[in-house]
Image 1: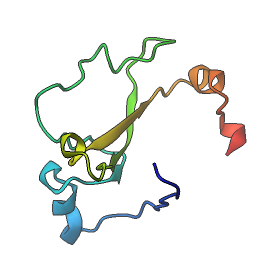
Image 2: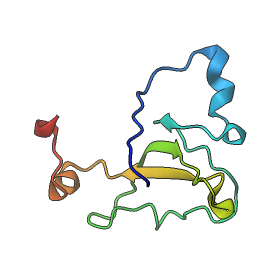
Image 3: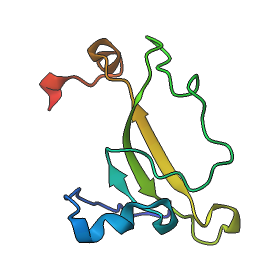
Length: 99
């Protein structure tokens, strides 16, 4: 990334804005279910398991993140999944006491 930070804040979506969360709209969202951009190449259940405790990770957020000048990454989304187990979060330096 060529310098700079983009900062956003999550806010509730009312009934009139739900259409924006559909995958065809390339949404950025927190929680709920991922809005996959296509069916090809979706991660299987094994890929979504925590590498430490092997429990399924929870969907945390999705960010629409195209790369300008890259036709192969024009409609790119980043999907973040996290383990819900407290012990796994503390291994990586995060804990509820840090919040």
